[in-house]
Length: 353
Image (tube, rainbow, N blue to C red):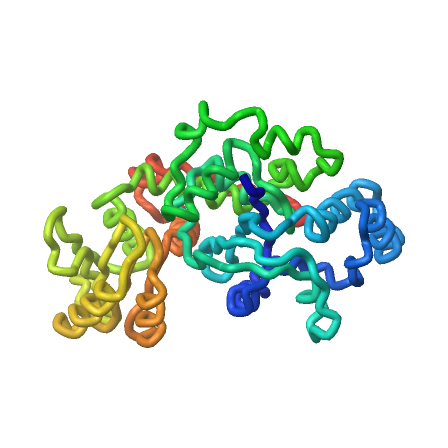
């Protein structure tokens, strides 16, 4: 079985679109020159020392491990995963070529690259189970997810779009699996233990997302959305479970909820929402004389659906799972006690290292 790798596309996802549009993945590190001539890990370490003269020993090992992985360990055929900051989704594909350096690239953060055949560019994070999301949530820029049968599960996700979890692989992977092979590798370092560098903000958000998915499934997600809107000052009427004619919530300002902005809300708690749902919501907004429409697409939107939403951005908006989490955190102290009991959160302040 081939290996699996994660390469992040910048702290703010600044290389998200560049990577997908050009069939590439890059690691940033603009201070680092061409690594093509490096044939050993120590060769890379020497370049890192030269580029960062005052670097500490732990940071030297950390950066060297990541760059050595990019230079020599990531191979054609390996599975590549890129968590997208801009869309909060996940891109997946196959490495086509190993490391190369684009000396003529104007942006120095886009010079260290591998070529990738991107096969999925909009996988919702909700399709990945919590333990695997924790591994993918490492703060490292380049790492190899291996624990909890990560490689087999990521391969399954690439085939089916859904994480099967650990259970199907508990008795099928032998001692020659990628995890066992890595344990004997002289290159083993933090790159192979990404959990040591968890991005605690991302991990916390993933846990909140998982709790909402468990606690507010089906029609209960509509209840949560209504409570959020009421906390934001809307007066709401929620449709009962069952056929709703494309209207889950009617919301508006004023005592009776009849003042502008008047809002029609459609809530979808399942898989990705397709374009026909967007068109239907647009029609309902028009027929009801509403000002705006809100589509809550917990499982995300297909590409055509996103395009349709963008084409009507002063009339329609979409909330994916990540937007719902943002809304919950924004209004949490004003949510009903019942909701807070089902979704217990606390705010923690910490130094931004």
